Each structure stands twice: as C-alpha cells, then as structure tokens.
Image (tube, rainbow, N blue to C red):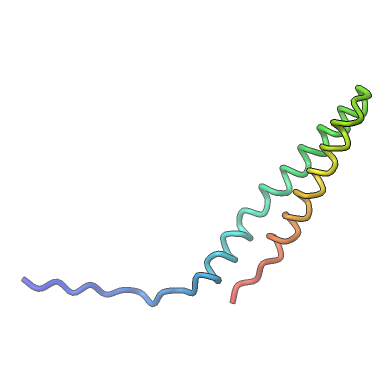
Length: 74
C-alpha cells in the first residue's frame, strides 16, 4: 500500500503572523481600558504614584493596540 501526502501550498509566515496579530488586537484595547480605569480609581483615592504608573502602562497598551490593529496581510 502506498500513501501519498499532498500538502497545501504553505502561506508565508509573515502573512499568518500579521493576521493573528490583527485578530488579537482587541486584547490590547481591553488592557488599555482596564489600566485607565485603575488609574482613575487611584486618582480618586489620591494614590498619585500608582495612578501615574497605571496611566503609563495604559499608554503602552494603547500603542501596542494601535500597532497590532494596523498589521496588513500580504
């Protein structure tokens, strides 16, 4: 008995990675919103150092969201 395996034409890895990054970009947006909420709560309770740190992390998450959501498929 002879088995022949036929493979589909492989897609380029950059195409697959870009597609995955676009599909998971919402995670970064949710993280940014959560950190922003944390910063606002800490400002309300007058915990300024933690609020500043939370705002910086929220900005980093927002930048990552903007980067990952704009990935293009080739």
